[in-house]
Length: 137
View 1 (cartoon, one colour):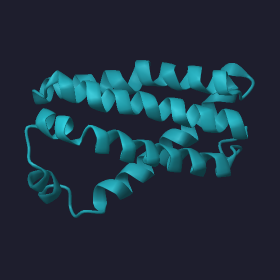
View 2: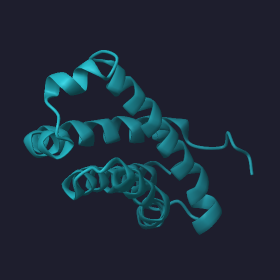
View 3: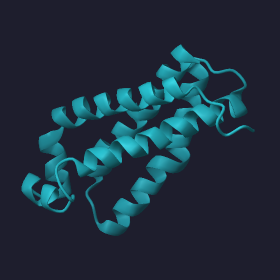
View 4: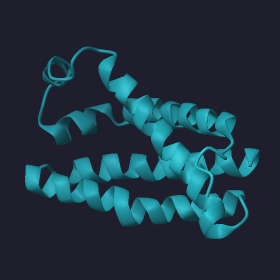
């Protein structure tokens, strides 16, 4: 397996599409998300290291997610299609992403509503990234 043999333009566009989804998702669910965290917006921003920091980390982590989805889909499915990439993304989400998040939220005593909001977003990320890869190969 050549670890650099991915469509880097598609990886970048998948990351950008994920960030756009996040902007829409969390703008629409901002009140519910804040209530689920049990914190105020000021408390969250005070602990984040600055206003841009969470977005920089978000972009970096979504770039990593996109890279691995692009890397693993042809290894698992053979062809890179919308359906194949979305299927791999959903499996990665169900097997690793949402399970890890729920595990952490249970130990942290977080509300289930936070897991539903954040988990739904991560599922959306995998689907959106899968569509981008399916369209761009």
